[in-house]
Length: 324
Image (cartoon, rainbow, N blue to C red; front, side, top):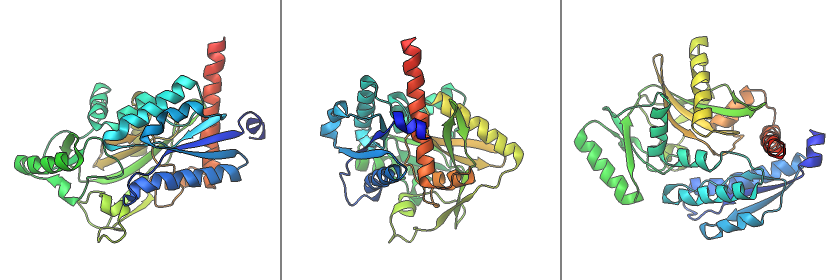
């Protein structure tokens, strides 16, 4: 670790500035970046924050650092700005954490994501009732509530119209899988996906969807109606989930720390989505925080050090291969 820091000392923690201070998920990105920066400094790196707006994506070209810890995750109709920022990093040749521009695009656009899943024969819900209706470009549960579950074509059309008008983007609809909800984090080790032990979202009420209010709105009656626990899985299910997670990582543009959201019904595994640049959390109530502890990480700094060193080595290997 000490040898690594001789070569990789300066880290830029890049994030998108919050644009809506009433949106807890928007503020969370900035708060996460601040926490990551502080932890990296404590771990012995020289980390600095850089927040950018949609008008400042070209500032990425001016970054002087050994590595960029990329926390940029614009969603909604602005996801293309995040892709643009990552493309700037790729053009500059700067080592950075997280997915490349292709991977981010796949996880930002759920319509494209589902097409890629079908292409690679990854099991994901199809259109069948009861169905759940979601905005195609949002994340963090935005646009998802208990009223997102519909039972007929007319209900689906009504809910889809509401979402299109409110969020000004396409929507997707798929079967609501009434089963266990798992979050599976995949890190990278020795150039291969490393599937961490799964975390399970445990709901107070059956047939519940993990809504925006449940995640973010403390004054909502839904808040705290779900908790995170280690997923207790038999060996067969654990093996199947590991295979599915590795396939998703390799085929859907995963890199460094994507999170998969799964539903399990009986012995069937359904991949709801892949989040290729999720928040890198240590909170015990987050899927990554729970799974990282189960995998043996003792501190947040230890998790972040694994991520940055792995990313730096990957870029060093690419550079050496190109040089040869």
